[in-house]
Image 1 (cartoon, helix red, strand yellow):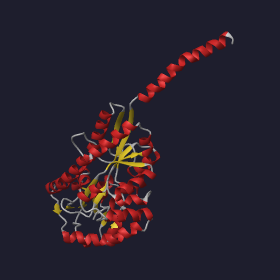
Image 2 (cartoon, rainbow, N blue to C red):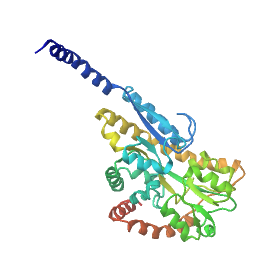
Image 3 (cartoon, one colour):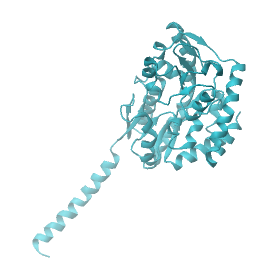
Image 4 (tube, one colour):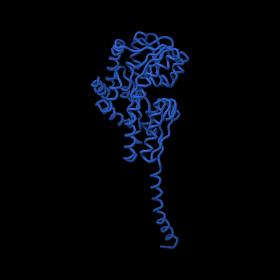
Length: 340
């Protein structure tokens, strides 16, 4: 071996441990994951509870992992457009998102189970989905699409209406209504309304211009998007509601699977621990929204048993349409009905 080659080999061997050390150090460098949502930003203590939940999740997971995982929060659709979030999660292009599952209905028909009219009648029933047959089946279906539910979140909703109330099914005739999902829109079409499909953060502009007469959305969104400024009537979800939406915190399974086991455990344990906060916050907003609208001069209405029965009757054909989509949809609906 000549002198030059000997020096080259010796130098390479000497640097080999350093190269390994560098690789090891990079593996230990804290990772920063991105969380996207469409709602107004706030702090851990103030603002839309969905933004607050994301911030609490980020803080607690970071603490549990001693800073190995960190998070950046992107509210107001500032990172990914609303209707692109689920697709981005599937591709691994987005790490986490808190978004209505039914927004993915055009891409994955099964996800519309998250906003079928009158299928979830209460928070109690919604909270039982996670560990019941329907939740386990939904988890498997989403995993096949490379999406993982981290926090199971259900929210009741109501109706903000510009010029006349929308309480009874017969009130919908001739109105331009946003239902929030394909199946909810089907029910309103049956009631005689024309429907618009758009995310909740676009409702204000549509109602302000008169392009929309009424919109159904969660109590929290009714507050956060200041719809009392463009509405004279509110149908509250504080007592009974035919509108319960599944709006989970989800994570890309591609990203999750790359994490060490300890970090995976931290993500899932913190996600589960925040579900109590979510349901308590959603219930509080169901009550708060009525006060917000009353203070703004709007008239507030509640749904009674007789009215709920009318909406339930209109929902039944919509359930069948959903079940007829494919075998998974049929199985999900049958499993969900076992909880009623």
